[in-house]
Amino acid sequence: MALFDAKIQQQLKDVLNNMKDEVQIINFTQEIECPMCRETRQFVEEIGSLSDKLKVKVYNFVTDREMSVKYRIDKIPAIVLLDKEGNDHGIRFFGLPGGYEINSFLGSIIELSGKREPIPEDIMKRIKAVDRDVHIQVFVGLGCPHCPAAVSTAHRLAMENSRIKADMIDASNFVPLSQKYNVTGVPKIVINDKFELMGAHPVNTFLDVIDRMKETSLNMA
Image (cartoon, rainbow, N blue to C red; front, side, top):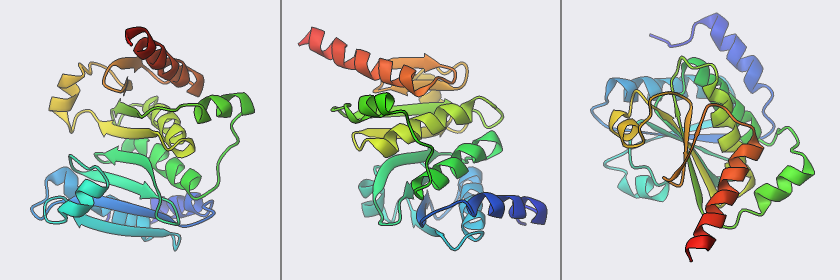
């Protein structure tokens, strides 16, 4: 049974018509699929069928091990977005980007296709100045209306600087990970395993935390 009825499919098509260039969607699942793995695969396949500019590839997390390693996938279900040339900008969705998160998923696709809202020059300079590896994990709930904004901000940072990687993580689907980071509310943003933000924040706040990381490391040196 289809996840999206005809009316929703048309709405999704209308959104995807805003794409500029092709985007590749890579889904990692396994042969004996967990319920969320199966639904996530169906989700990307159905969305992929709604635009000629979307190319979907499904890999087996276990048997396609070289691809799992290539894209640094350590848990499933997982989705990787690549640009038209197959470049990996560090954008990940762990879990089903359904509910409110379909907005961040579609938004990342549109932006990765080459249609992005301009970022003020002073902020872009700060993004480009990040010169160390940054890993942003955004823990979300699919019924959380504030979570997509946090995910979208993290993913946009990843698009603009290759040193930044950003994950959406469905907190309820990855319980041990949520417990590890003491996720008691969403969105919870964890940067390089040490620094945390609660709630949706503007890009400047993310950058303030990243700058503080650098200051901390210099003070410890």
